[in-house]
Figure 1 (cartoon, one colour):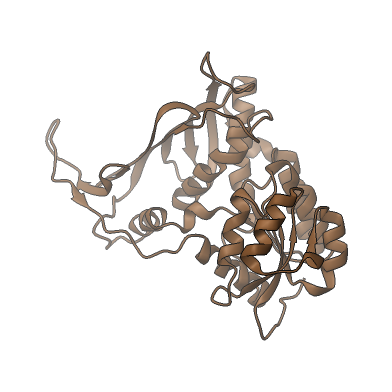
Figure 2: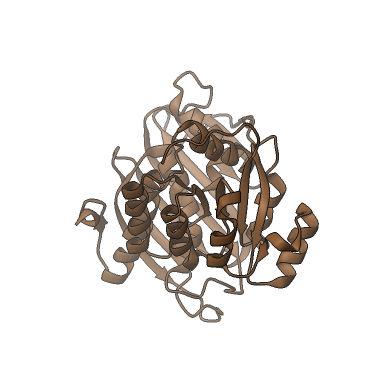
Length: 344
């Protein structure tokens, strides 16, 4: 698929325009290089609200994706899919077959086989598909990335030996997370993408899952794991949906010092103490400028128009899906799972 050349904004078919589908409607503007051109959602109420936001007429609104693709195809330049995760691969694959670039919400798919299938068809057809892993475009994640990669950064921790990543979430109602390991494929994919963004591919994982006795979830919705990265960094990961208080804590410990984030203090850094049980002053780390989904859209635009492949292309995001699959295999088979075995 060759890069498309247009003098004006790229015209978008928005698929799924409620909930997580609202942000593309708001941020597809001439400033990011896009303009809404057609809408698709199974809910008439969502279509009505999206029409009010965009000013689009009823004639370009559809309740069936196949019909929307067939009828609007000549008048669009790309598709943004914010349907539930189980529809991501079939919908994105149809777009690839039609020769249309597509941005699909995270996670890429609800299982490893479908994620590999979308990656393969994209490669075979020369398609352009990206996954909206928006966390890596946020200020905290971008600041950590720069602090890790730039040795002269004042918060550079040096050679890292260990990372702890814990997110407790208060999500008592399953809503769309009703399939096995939905919390992994739908939400841990964000966390694993952050970890890959910071430390590179994961080589092995040993994981467990559980749910609270009073949980409304049918399947386990809490997970923990020990992670080994290809660069030998070790990590501990905890993610829950049955929490009674929401919190996010990230600790990165290195030869020079510790880079730590929590909801109360924000991002901080301290040098590594050289005395037994010692401590050093904890200093705040200013966050870099970043614009979240707006920057994500700009990367998607550059991929379509100039062929600049971003870190959220399906080819790159397959490593995030591999981490999810390692977690699932480790939990279900009660053993360590390696990235190498997923190639077979």
